[in-house]
Amino acid sequence: MEGLTDGALYKNIMRNLEEAGALINLNRNALERLKIPRRAIVVAVPVRMDDDRVQIFPGYRVQHNQTLGPFKGGIRYHPSVNLSEVAALSALMTFKNSLLNLPLGGAKGGVQVDPSNLSKHELEHLTRRFTSEIAPFIGPDEDIPAPDVGTDAQIMAWMLDTYSMESGFAQTGVVTGKPVEIGGSQGRDSATGLGVVFIIEKALETMNKTISGSTIAIQGFGKVGMHCAIEAYALGGKVVAVSDVSGGIFNGDGLKIPEVVKYVEENKSVKGFPGAESITNEELLALEVDVLAPCALDGVINSNNQHTIKAKIIVEGANGPVTTNASKELEARGIFIVPDILANGGGVVVSYFEWVQDIVWLFWNEDEVRRKLKTIMYRSFETVWKFAQEYQCDMRLSAMGVALKRLETAMKLRGQAW
Image 1 (tube, rainbow, N blue to C red):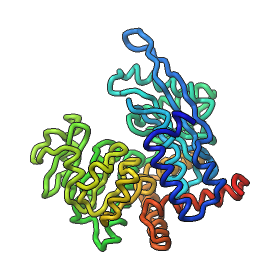
Image 2: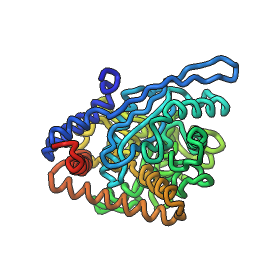
Image 3: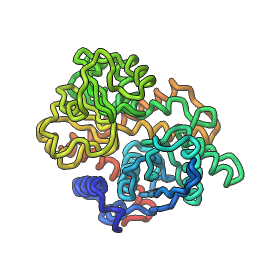
Image 4: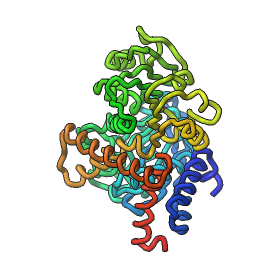
């Protein structure tokens, strides 16, 4: 499976899978099936650019496992997208959906492109052509894409429209994370960040602390990090630092997050925000805070910089921000880590809510969505925490163990493992 399973992130996830599998004595046949995605789709996406030349972009959709239900996972547009990264993220979605007790399998997709370099016209053409290429493999009962890094509600709307045109009638359930006006769910934009905050609350609770007054540093100020900061601030959390690709800002007395959000809307970056000290992303990671929430890309905390980490708790808002080796070193130092498949599950939970609402054509208000999300995130944390106490292991192993137990049971019942 060269090119599919040889990336660092994929190998990282497989090490976690093997270790958790050994911990719970996972059925060997189930383990082997979970190591390799069921299907990997590689497509060429030709786009006629505004200057009339045709440019080809590589596109991917990897469907990892559908034992529990239809494939589910985001679509990302980023220059670093490759087959192995998408395969790794599809596996994470399988484990995340299982852990959160959702009736969904795992998938991920992406196009290797920098969307900031495209005009709106080019972006629409890219999205529609990519949707056409993967259309035979997606659908409301087969595989349901959603937004991810570099994609948003508008891109989901174009995907919905393209798929619906090709099928001959409206298929609102084919994607989630779309605008509310065409079947999207209230609360979807803030869901992942809000879910991270619910997990921060529960993690602090294990140390007899509350979020009110606790110091928090958030790396990444995109869809996840920004909403994490907004929700943590609203609950009284002292968000002392945030960052984006341009660098970070720090104020030991706490940043006024509504003002930071307004500044970013006007300036497209946190850089230069008045009343705060400029810091690098590496300096943000090394701050002495109660909670560090890395909400950007994977591998930002690794064996090279783990010794600089001083936070008491790390809540993984991004996928794979702490490598396996670094995670073990940090845990040995007494730093409490809540893994990605639990911490950033809010997005897929509300995506599930949206899918259900589209199927029955009955929609909930935002308060209902937030209340239901809180119930699932709290319950999932408590399940993982209890498992960790029972097996005397860290939260990463525990989360994977909980996910694997449910998958193993379902695979045995379906005759996929024996």
